[in-house]
Length: 100
Image (cartoon, rainbow, N blue to C red; front, side, top):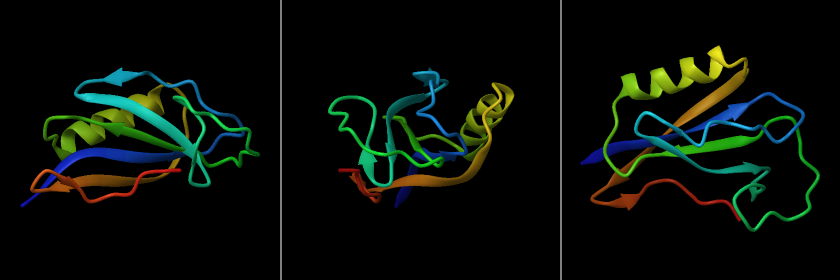
């Protein structure tokens, strides 16, 4: 059975965003750009584009309402998001990839 454990949020910003480290059941685990991790060491020198991927994960199962609350919180802080991708686990195994 698939269980929801997080979300990748793509923001529209020319810089690496300063985001809350936690919100509700979620923890910001990293920010990547073009598939390369740019926060939470290691942080290589890369040219960033204006569409960073921000991964928020929870050890416990979360709900769609939890994801909605996180999205609304970030919008309320002034961030413009362009896309989000829910992150699922199946039988304890991540069903999503990790950045470089």
